[in-house]
Image (cartoon, rainbow, N blue to C red):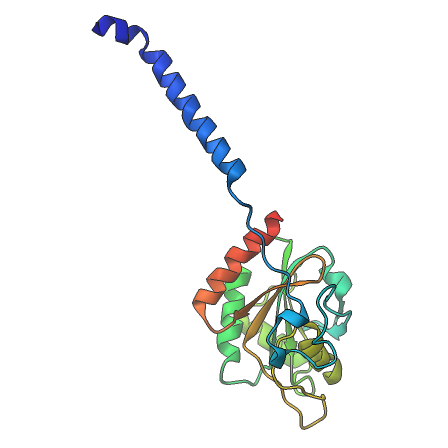
Length: 221
């Protein structure tokens, strides 16, 4: 009897391995594919959305922009064409949440340093203070990779409109005058089609971990 079973031992092993492979393939086929939501103004907390677009339920995208980075280069949507990117709003003289946010953005930069399809974009909310030299000094202090991460300054009204009407990132309306000030801890994940795919608290490590996971999901879409 033992001799009989030993003759078929190899066959049994082969059949077992094949069974495992088949079951794995079936599981992968049936496993639902992960997708990130596409955020529209009508589906976001109304406090974060300008009243002029709160009714919008589809087709919302980040508006075109023209701003200046830490190297004095003009940055537009063309620089982010075909890229997934993470955006935020900060100012270099901030002593509260901005240093934490910048450090966490640096974590994202390090984690994805070899992935040229992912970029970062930080907008100054005090562009009158954050000149190109000031941004460059800050970039050097924070270890910013110029090829991956743009710190931008420019027209204050344009930046504030981007924050409120494009990125849906701030609760204060802001008109961009000299006394105006907006600030937000939000990191915003934007896909290759300029659509918002996620909001994250840039001060929380657990949100940064989730953001990195969501980037991987987005890359597979």
